[in-house]
Image 1: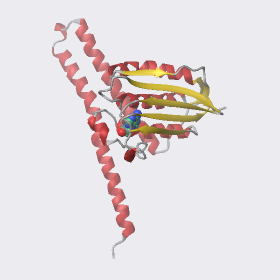
Image 2: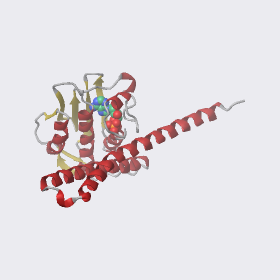
Image 3: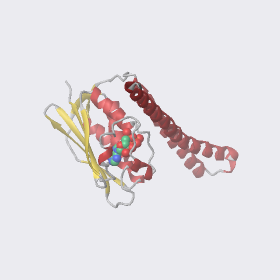
Image 4: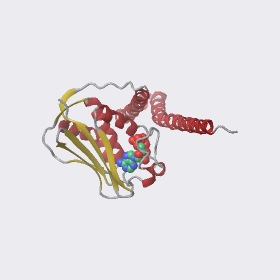
Length: 247
Ligand code: ADP
């Protein structure tokens, strides 16, 4: 007699193991890309520093710096993921203006948006004061905006990511809308799972670990809020984040 329960358990363990192996492969690849650039540019500089004119040198160092920032954010994401697994993420709350934060984040992402020819817009609104962990809310916004930019349609002409925030009773609802590739029906219930990346994103050769939304969901839920989305494949996606204004 075969023990069905055990077989199922074993299958589950195997599946979890596969996910982890895939994840390690993805992460190693993600880490290698910026590292390769840093190595190559520093090697070029070191080979003959005297012969380099100042502009070329500055240009190279700017690339090295940008790639180090990318490495840093990948490592931060891994650490956050470890915290999420250990249920060890702690919020540091303070009162701040969410509208102001949104403007700052849009400013900081404008370069990335420009490089992908995506218009980053914000529906103007008045100050909205909330009590929350500003750093963590910033992280959620950056994740949603960068996904909106990453998963835009390569060939489309009027690409956008639009943000808005409005109060609703004692909460604030933030929306991040894009007219990108959208999410296929069969993937829609998986995108908040750790490690999950839709097959279509591999065709688009976008970078990512499949952790961003899992981390964002944890952050939003720690605030007593909710995160959800509406998406039409090939048309676009709108993510919503609802969090209590607090105090
Ligand atoms: P990553 O972007 O690193 O792959 P995320 O957890 O942020 O990981 O997202 C998980 C998956 O959800 C993505 O790989 C992609 O398939 C899908 N996804 C997320 N945001 C969008 C979006 N705005 N448009 C289309 N697909 C999206």
